[in-house]
Image 1 (cartoon, rainbow, N blue to C red):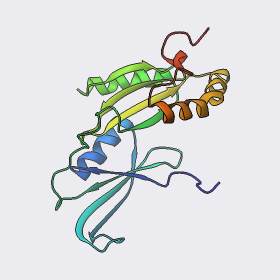
Image 2 (image 1 turned 45 degrees about the vertical axis):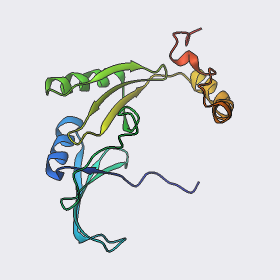
Image 3 (image 1 turned 90 degrees about the vertical axis):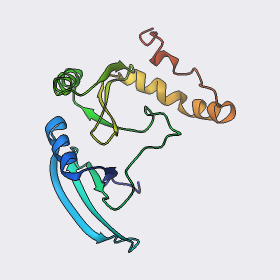
Image 4 (image 1 turned 90 degrees about the horizontal axis):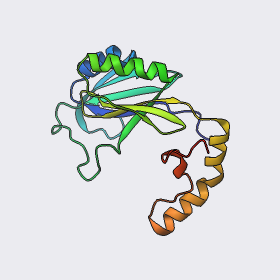
Amino acid sequence: MLIQQIHHVAYRCRDAKETVEWYQKHLDMKFVLAIAENEVPSTKAPDPYMHVFLDAGQGNILAFFELPSQPPMDRDRNTPAWVQHLALKVDSVDRLLEVKARLEASGIEVVGPTNHTIFKSIYFFDPNGHRLELAADCGTPEMYARLDEVKWDMLNEWAATRRAPTHAAWMHDGSADH
């Protein structure tokens, strides 16, 4: 396989220090690296930045850029807010509920848990407006096998019709156990 793992995923932030402290406090991520330049190494553009890196576990790195000389950050207004998000895995549904309670106690609005049958999730926003999802797997090998069997049929049907195929409707219609 060509790709070994994700080296890092980078997003923009409004304030690098606030962002690092928020992720440390609410998601227990360790601050591992800061890089700052006055010129972009790849493009040579004169654009000062602070680039911070956080440990998201298992070798996964979540990074942010603060760009003080650029216009204020915004999101893609043509895409619904629920679409663009970063989903992070937690070890259990109990941990998911524990984090939800901790976030809410800090005044963070949380949606969920949402039952996706093979995993349960909660959703919330970081201080930069990035939507985050915490997910706890709870699917069975049989469920994953059923999904694997229909993935190409679903994709091909979608490509032809642009209508939601029903091959995996059991995930959200209550019939998962039947």
